[in-house]
Length: 109
View (cartoon, rainbow, N blue to C red):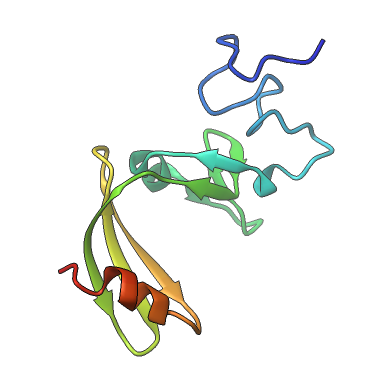
């Protein structure tokens, strides 16, 4: 019988093994996608091993559901100011092909 991913036996966001999405020590926990609040992101600590940690766990890829408050464009990137009820955060997107962002979000100020 497989483990219930909705079990209440572990803390929210952590699998039964105590790592993101139930990754074992043999898996790469930083590769797991983890839902987080902005307040949690702000509590993450960057360590000397060049990884981000929260409450002693490695944090890699994250997803945040938030409201876009503002968008700024520069020659090199787009800057998004987001808010989710727990805090605000500035996100930047670099790279080629950012014209899609201008088409989709260009009217937001």
